[in-house]
Length: 290
Image (cartoon, rainbow, N blue to C red; front, side):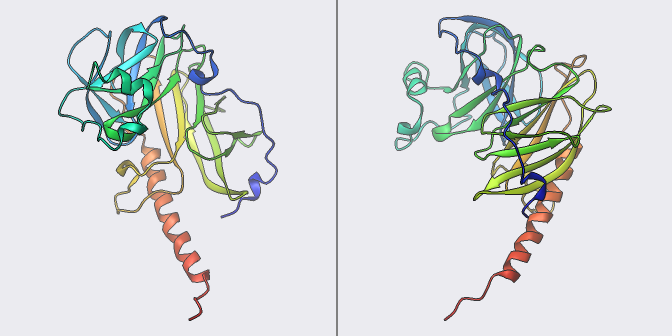
């Protein structure tokens, strides 16, 4: 439905996602940090980092943190997948694979993604979205405490649409794709209203709450995905855009995070709302003339 809450949105200058906003380092630069691999959709098994400390291949879980990986090496991170766990690039899809990735795959056919890491950071999240030919698009989120302090919520717009957010009934922020904004909670909570722009109109997506403890880094990611992750228990799908919450505790880094209950509740509620909206639209739609 059209939203009156966002008709007077004033664009606000907000920071780009940290990896995008920072000046791109030279590809020869070396970095040293912890890296969390997170899957955008289905879990991704058999992953490894070039120049990492070795060990068994790991699985990037669907929108969940697990154990961070220690990495020291070039700022252009190479992520490989054990042969047999992912399909090789199809002949008709290779033209769509980024040129740099395609060139490096000649020496390493198991290479599935490249990620540009920010210099000076001690911790990042690499969100791996499915791409063509068994490869992945890497979204790098700079989680160094200087960029995302503990006790704060950072909201990322990784959808293809403009979005608007009003948090704790204060100023409304308008975010372009790939922009982000850091929000200070009130009483360890952020009540947010989310809308997206469609055909020149603002459409309200949801009104929800995210808890943020003082010892947590919490990230709300707004995206558009067809992944089964967003299918509710009754088989219905979520709304036009999807939202997920990633949270990392200062004291429990490396402990497997349980899926956020609010996320699943939101998925089911949006799925039902979408079905109801489709039924209303069907009733309003005039019959075709013969």
